[in-house]
Length: 206
Length: 159
Image (tube, rainbow over all chains, first blue to last red; front, top):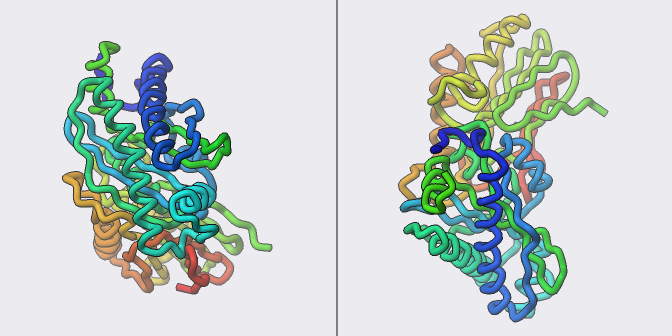
């Protein structure tokens, strides 16, 4: 049965999205692994429906500075994918790609910024490719955008998008580990309500 | 130590005489600080979207319904329209979005609508720090009416 609000998603339906997150994230981890030439794994993803403030609290201190790579999804699935890169993850990536030791996120130069954008792009596109072939949906991706700022500010855009339909947001989150180090990176899939219906229908669970 | 009262997203808090109302990391959202210096009554509102588009929803999520509800409460607590000092912050453009969602300029639309709704209520904005591409934490000290803004990598400043 089609839903009209995030609140109508039950645990079984959320499990489907957790599974999708696991497949998408697995594919993204493989891509990241070959790019960084390191062992990359993904912690078990979560699919949750949370009120705005709870969602933000789940992600961390709203004032902490992070880099976010954002891609807008259009086509049969509408929504946002956001890859959250905290400083420790950025350090690890820049060290492996450029041999840099430490760069504060607010002081990234052009090359470092484009490396992070590209990492985000690869992670997001491999995630979405896995998802769209699994569900048989056509999804177009926008050009990736990088922003470095307070977590709360970065999240305001996806929240405003979800906020037009609901007082809650649905997040499918996943975290990457590089060589078994947990680096708090976050992969967020934020689909709109209509896309949930499309995905569930395509997967035969509605 | 003044008591900190945290205002969430799509939320509003009122304090009188003392305390610091604070809302963290406003991106495209707008923080609206209301203060009546005569009775030391302050409110901080954190809105997310310009206009109410659904009936069953948190009123503080939107500029129009949020401002109206905040004013209703402030007037009930004894605030006078002629004394209210209003300062706003936020409305940043965190990402350069070009997609069809029209969200790229949500911050700007929020700022415009906040000002439009305030003007319709016969109020004007005394100070503002809006736009650009960075998030702002905004606080209102209810004992003095002073509003402070801090951003990543910048010194805290008084608005």
